[in-house]
Image 1 (cartoon, rainbow, N blue to C red):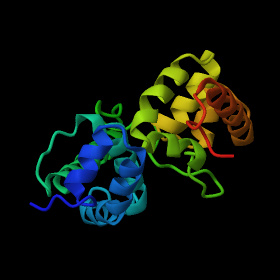
Image 2 (tube, rainbow, N blue to C red):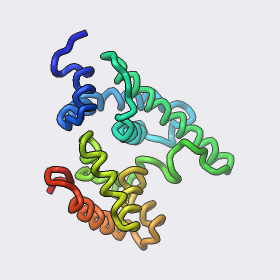
Image 3 (tube, one colour):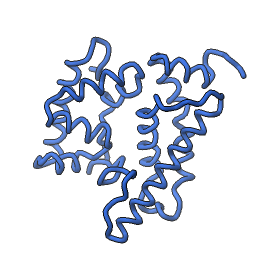
Image 4 (cartoon, one colour):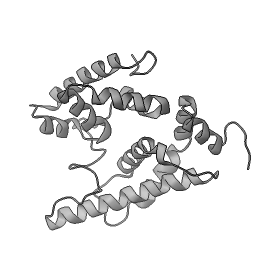
Length: 207
């Protein structure tokens, strides 16, 4: 197996060691693979209910958050792992919709209530790019999680709903008891500023 500096195997190893540049390169390299896997995973149970891009987005987010659990050692094992995450996400969503059709509660192990990757009325994802970028840095992820936990509860919940759970601003507003999407967006921006203030220089939202 090639051990060139840009092989997937080497990027995985560097990312595991806390190299944010390698982490970015690794996931950027596999965006198209995740999108193709999501398009294939939309079967009859999901067609008309889920968009491939939404499925890809939530699967990709899960892969970033679960990267520390990846233990593959072969060049192709990372691609296999990503495809499995997409397939599992698709199965979770199919079970969710099946339960919803029966009028039952959403099944455990699927997404939280509401549709993951749901967009706001204007079509914008709930995840803010400047905050999402924090998750991509391996060494920053642990710092971010600790900083989020130290925020006042309302700010922490706003970050978690948009950031980890993937809820739209509409759903976040409902859960937080806010009157509108704009109110949820403003609360999230305040939470982001507080989060950035708790992080070391060089780790935090751009701008």
